[in-house]
Amino acid sequence: MGASHSYGASSLGETSSATEQSISLYNENVCTVPLEILEEIFLNLPPHQVVCHCRLVCHEWKEIADSDSLWRERCKRERYRPCDSSRIPKDWRFFYFACKKRRNLIKNPRTVDGMKEWEIVQNGGHSWKIEDVMVPHPNGARRNFVTSFGMCTKTQLIKLAREGYNASFMDQVQPDIRISDWYAPRWDCGCEYTMSVQLLNQRQEVIQSFTPKTVHFDQWNDQKWNQMTHVFQNYGPGVRFIRFTHGGKDSQFWAGWYGIRVTDSCVEICPAMDSTSPDALLQSSLRMDT
Image (cartoon, rainbow, N blue to C red; front, side):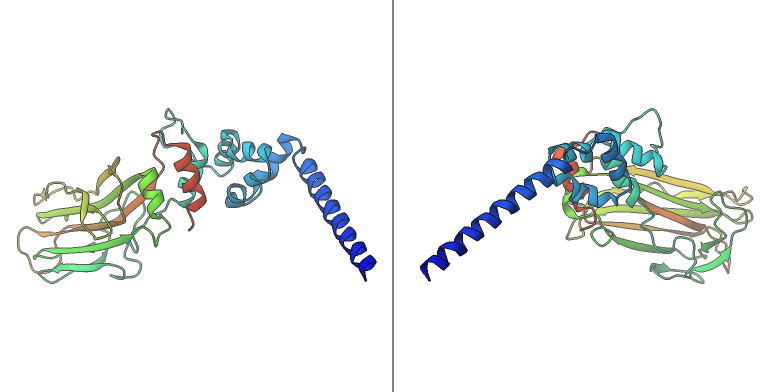
C-alpha cells in the first residue's frame, strides 16, 4: 500500500510539472507571433474580446490591444471619423467605442409610432396631432408633430444606465452630450417654440440645463425648418438621466393645428476630444456594455 501511494504521488507531481511546462511553452509560442499578424488578427475579432481577453494574455498582447495604431485602423475600416478633422482623438480606443455606441437616445423622434414613447405634459387647444411635413425636411423626415392654439408640450426621460452608459462611465469620462431639435412654423400663422433639456442625478435633481428663450414666428413667414442645437460638456459627476422637453402653440388662437411643428429630435452621447486619464478610459472600455 505504501509503495503504491508513493508511486501515485510521484505520478501526480510529474503530471503537474508536464502541464506547467506545456502552459509555459504555449505562452511563449503565443507571445512570439509577429506583431503585424497579431494586429491583423485583433482587427478581425469582436472589439470587446480584444479589450477583455486578448490584452490579458501577455505583455506583448496588451501593448497591441492598447495601441493607438490598432484602434485608429479599426476606426478607419469602420468609417468612424472625427467631425472636426483638425482635432485628432487623444485616445483612439475610447473614440472607437464611443462612436460604436453612438445613436439617438430619443425614441420615436419622427412620429413613426404615433405618440408612443412621449409623455404628454400639456395638450392645449385641440391637442397634439401628427401630420405630413409641409416643406421638405433637411434630414428627410416625412411627418411631424403639430401643436394647436393652446400650449402643447411633450417630454422623454432617458435612463442612461438602461441605454448602456453606466455610472462610472458617465462620471469618469463625462462624454459630450449633443442635443438637436428641428422646428418649423406654418407660413400663414404666427406661433412659438419652446424646448428644455435637463441633466439629472439619481434623484432626478437638475445638475445642468439648457433652456433657450422662446422662439417666436410672425404670420406670413417662410415656414422653413430650423434647428436648435446644444452640447453639454464638463458637467461634472452624477448624471444619470436626461430629460428632453419641447413644444409650443400658435399665437393667433386659431382653431385647429396652426402651431409649431417639431420632428427629428435627437440626444446623443458623443466622444469628446478632451484628454481623459488612461485608467478611466480603460475602465470605460471594459464596462461600456455592463
